Image 1 (cartoon, rainbow, N blue to C red):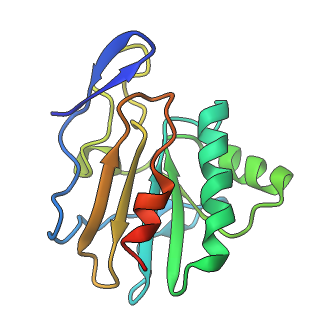
Image 2 (tube, helix red, strand yellow; image 1 turned 120 degrees about the vertical axis):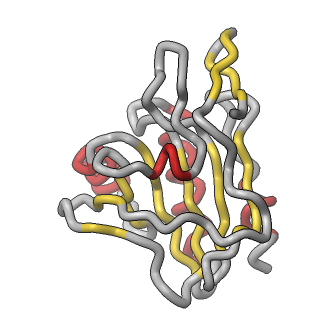
Length: 163
């Protein structure tokens, strides 16, 4: 179990992020067309995990990763939240963002498998803000659970492991 802050309150997650150097759990998420999404074989993957696209910090994170995507060779970025896929698709459409894959975890055990579901607090059941970077074979190269839900992740650190 890990901890982060939501406002002034400490929030626990249901587990820990996958360990560096291990094979990440397989996952199936849902895209904006309600089709299944999983890691693309042979591509590196950044999982941008956040609670809900309805907050400014989550929106800023999606925009930041979308801005980085064109400079990352053989890398997909999947925006993962518990939001319905239409919510994230509508946000990305309105912002002209097409460089990310939408990956709603509303139908899956992703949050439990990756240890990021908030177990308590007023947002329990939503995903804590985190980043997981996977190599082409699914090996975990980088993880970060932000110290607070309202803090953006370290984008430079996430991208640096891919250079």
